[in-house]
Length: 449
Image (cartoon, rainbow, N blue to C red; front, side, top):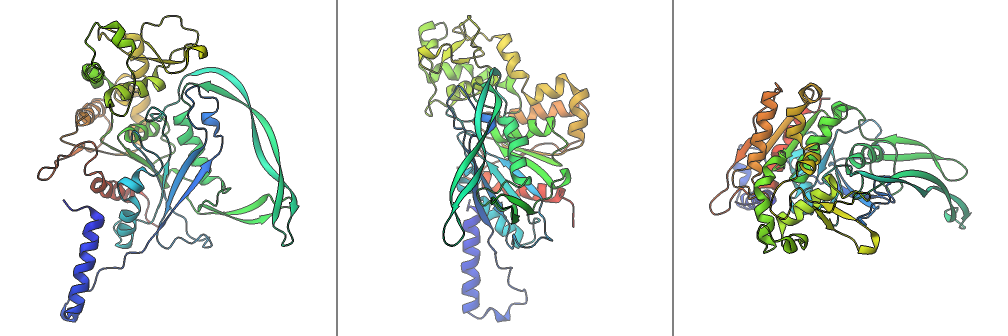
């Protein structure tokens, strides 16, 4: 199948040939010219959501923001809806832009009038183990952290531009976690940065218009719509799970949610415990081999379980029981690591599984419909998955669909799609195509002007 942006190139070539050979005889007008939007990248420095994490993941986080064709920061009369699009495992803020042609697709669809002009925000939720699963890791302890509030200008050059400054610092108290607070990072930090005048890195969503005598901003112009009806969230794989869970827990923030090829039913992961043993060349009952399990990109199931363990079941620093413990730091740092939800014999630990299931969206709906049905009823929901997903995410979609139906949540059934020719519809193939469907879905749910 020809990718969307290649199809566009072919159409442009054909249009050029028709023009050369006398297309003036055509009755149909030429298609619209594709206008280009822009993508910017801003950063959090020392994001409070990642302060003091024991896994050593970066506290600096990047955010990529796509602005639509015609976006003009000086035009104070135009504001845009915003889609917060969350990346998958081993991804970053560039995931949809680099792998799935997000900018080109959005440019084309907006220029053709297929979707409304919108901002699309793609934050970095990566970790050393592949991803933080958009979940706040358990607190280990509270710690004091000094941080910079702002810089006070102390010197100016001959043109009046700031040439020197002094950091004005303050102290905050942060919860020391194993991986960080990835859920809070999305629903609080990212949205606040986009909507609450964070422009230290020339972000496109606010424009400062006046400054005090210290060079600090006083007034600004906003270019987003800070209201639920104008916000949406979605994602692929791990990001689809994160979008669904955050929307369920914070329905006041979003009007629609989408999940592509997402792990929405953790109980189905039990079937893949043998894959972890196989990837490590270990048989059930081999205790030495079990405790030597190690994550790597060549062992996808092992790494997935370790990454989820780092978020859902980090080993408590005060817990002496190491039956399920796997170290992820030098021994002198103590019991820093994760508890896997199964032991040397492949037997599952109900205690650890229960920690995982507390963050599983299917279990959340099934076990507490009174809480989550109103939240889900307030959202417009879209789910899809390839029929040949090698990680069985199509089964996850089925399980979540059944849970929604059982809870009485009105929703459309998941969309399942097949591949073409010899290219199966697995967890990664065709996401660029499905992104078109997702953008159209969210656009249709934003209010008309």
